[in-house]
Length: 109
Image 1 (cartoon, rainbow, N blue to C red):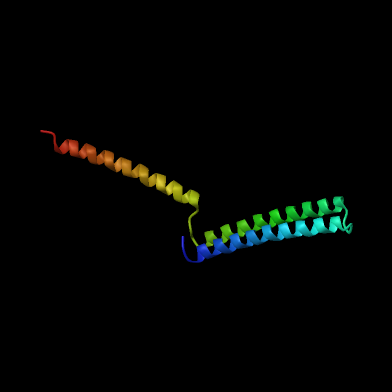
Image 2 (cartoon, rainbow, N blue to C red):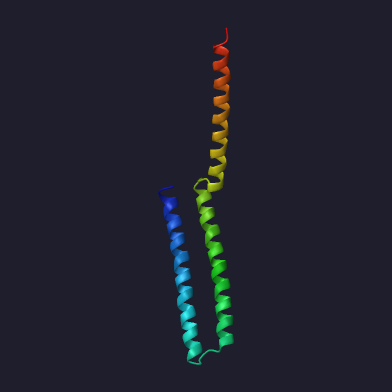
């Protein structure tokens, strides 16, 4: 897959990577605040839990948006591709069987 679809995927992965990195940095910052006594451990845990839930929600939204854009671009999904590949393999096998049957009829006396 090339062109715009690949660019969209790369941007989505970049955003997810950024979200993960930001999450790590926030966790480090919260730990520092806890160590300095400016934030209780309970408050820190609650904040981090809410942050992680929010980030997971954002990742899901981002994934759905990327999927939506890819569908609008009339691109098939991996699942659709695999289904088509299996159909082609099945049809090839049927053609081979028919060829063998026809070849057998041509060789009959």
